[in-house]
Amino acid sequence: MGDSNYELSTQILKGVLNKYLATKTPKFTMTEKKKQLFQTMLQTINEQMNKAKEAGTAGK
Image (tube, rainbow, N blue to C red; front, side, top):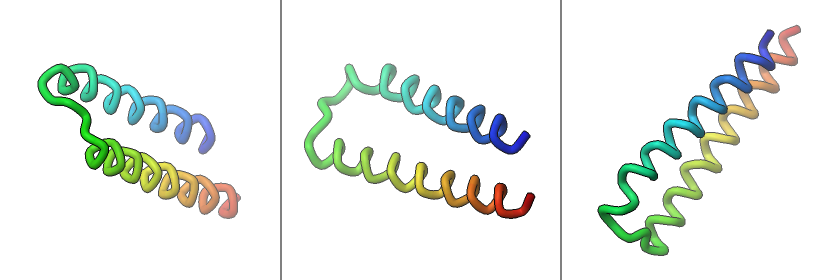
């Protein structure tokens, strides 16, 4: 059950980010700095979700 919730929230998150990029990208150019910030944000989110997943599995 925990895994499906994890997968679902990951997909929702990616969908939201992709939709955001699709609507915003034409209006500005992705500078290197913005790309790096975005990558860092994604990495942080992934790390947090992995920690949550590990904590959830450990609780079983």
